[in-house]
Picture (cartoon, rainbow, N blue to C red):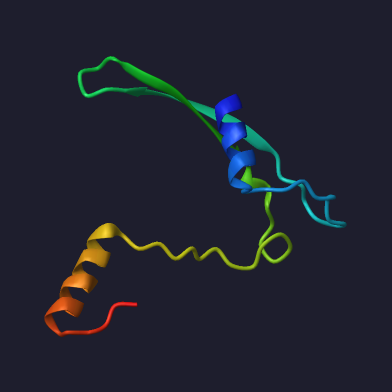
Length: 90
């Protein structure tokens, strides 16, 4: 947990702010996982801090749930098409 928390601080992924008025404050929970090597031996213990988003209310705490994510296979296809058609890739 301390390694994960230190990573949060180094990356600047969050900052402590006062709680908003008339909004639900989400709790959080640490989840733990044991990572194994391909031969089954212990590689490391992994900890993640996750928000308990099930306490949110649509229209009050959030308005949309879309999160754009591209799969690596889609990126490869787009780059291949761009290469064959001489399209610039920005």
